Length: 170
Image (cartoon, rainbow, N blue to C red; front, side, top):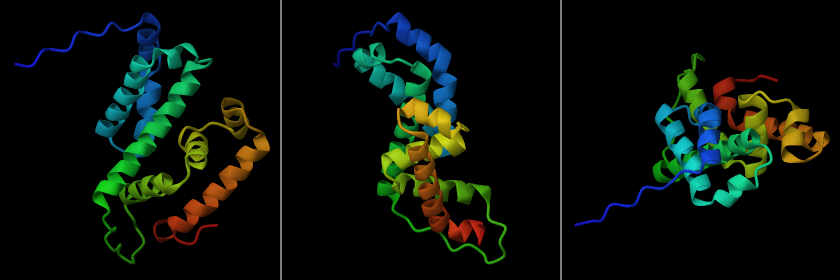
């Protein structure tokens, strides 16, 4: 007979943060994974990490920024893990153009998962979360110029990898 685990008391600050920001974490993860179930998994993992290491929560200066970044990283980790498990080739797409949004979304998620963490995070904040370069620079504590350079290089790299889906767009 297995003993039940004792109930964990959730610190008040963490519960308040969950109530205030669970939507931000879920939406951020959903934009990357394209799946509500995966976004729920990311939401749980982000807040479970904080529950297990409350000192991370206490050290947060900006809870929303921290949680958004944690969601991005957890979602990218999930996509990468799925890629390692599945390792399947995409089926050949018809020549007629009209690609499905779902295929493009999955291809983008796979391409993002291939990026190094910082460029993936900055690209996600810029284009999936809609933050401006100055907002990203402030959030990450880096220069605006560095953000712009990373955004430019990442867009070029993703454009190359998504060429079969987007055609010859400049």
